[in-house]
Length: 279
Length: 253
Ligand SMILES: Nc1ncnc2c1ncn2[C@@H]1O[C@H](COP(=O)(O)OP(=O)(O)O)[C@@H](O)[C@H]1O
Ligand SMILES: [Mg+2]
Image (cartoon, rainbow over all chains, first blue to last red; front, side, top):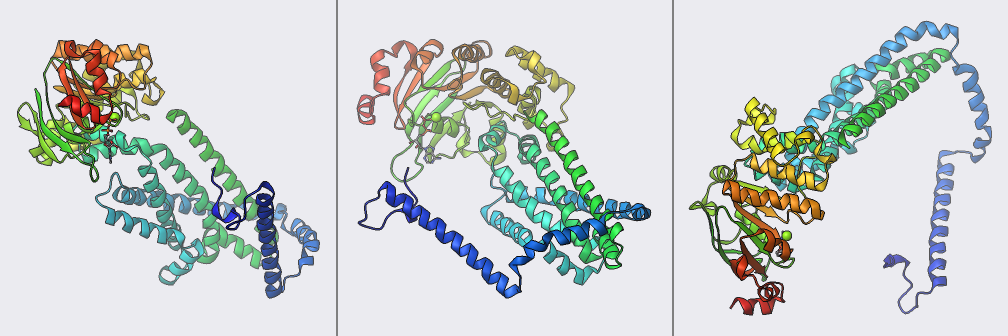
């Protein structure tokens, strides 16, 4: 097996076992020194004392005392639940709508199903741009035009999901063996028939997996987006926290954790069922 | 009847993959195309239904030149040509029955095909075809769960659902065990005998070709180096087909 060129000895120097491992050790030492230097520089600039780590337990103690919900916090449960459901709905709705549009774009853009290479690159580029703007960027951008409401959060999640899912679906379609598509084309089946009878069945399992993954991801993001758009569970947390109602705020965190675990459990159950059908 | 005249194809630059290929394949006969790997067998079969576009020549199927047809007319002619593959190319997340029904798509409206709205008669025919290839009890099994031999039989049933007059088979038994090989070859032989179909099979096993074919075409380096009935396929003639390109060209005269 050829070695990677940068590990090779200098011209004229014969490669021996010792020189190879010495070189490798040198690279590792350099990398670690570089990371340590970066940490030191960051600590200096941010005025961040490395000794703070020693007091970490104090912060945790404070959290344990103040954030543990008590019986009084439970009177907020109704409000929290409502916000939680709204957040879940925004995450599911943005994923489903984005999924439909992403499938259309992916069919137009993917090599076996799309009309031409120009459109393929256009859609790839478009999706990459959408995907690479972070969720907070989307939320701030959309706040200008749509103000603080659920729709702004929905749109932010929608655009990010659209970019992500379009790329994922395109790659899934391009992974299909083209001979399977040709096998239906040579029967005389037309474009839409081939898409419906060959392409869609072939990509169904991965597409559902991507959608479930995206819903999980969007629930996490929706919490964050809620802080900015003043909606959903993120807003409720912000409200309690800033009015020093730490118990209810702790309850919000608990509720979010429970939701995430519940969604993950449900989606892994669904995936297992799909897997059983596919095998 | 299939008549191929002066068919040529060059992929890139110099070496032609098909070099002035001419032959005739008769209905009711099994024509085996044999030759070493890279001889052009796949290229030939795929240009016969215009899955790849060739550079020059004529492909006359019942006196219609497939190379001259517009897209829509070509699609209509393609329904008469069934194709089966070494890798079966079934849609594995669907059942055997659904895969066979794909063979009827060209006869259906776009919408009915997209929504899988098959008539009672179509479903009955697909079931009967599965029974013909001995897979009745596997109709509702997912294609991905079937063995190689079973997949190939589903592939044949899918092609038969098109009501073809010709079958193009590209190394249909290359991935199969001996028992499945016999089953698949027997089915193809029967299609020629009982249904008067034109059967073209790419093979690399000479013994199978001799057992099952009526006519043998030998390809080497894109050229036809042998074209004759099985009776004339002597050991020497077969050796010449598999000989080095230069020798084979000399043998072709
Ligand atoms: N898509 C392609 N692009 C370039 N060359 C090809 C392509 N397909 C086949 N060839 C070449 O054409 C020749 C014939 O190939 P093929 O028809 O696959 O032979 P066979 O099926 O007899 O093994 C080979 O030299 C092969 O390298
Ligand atoms: Mg081949």
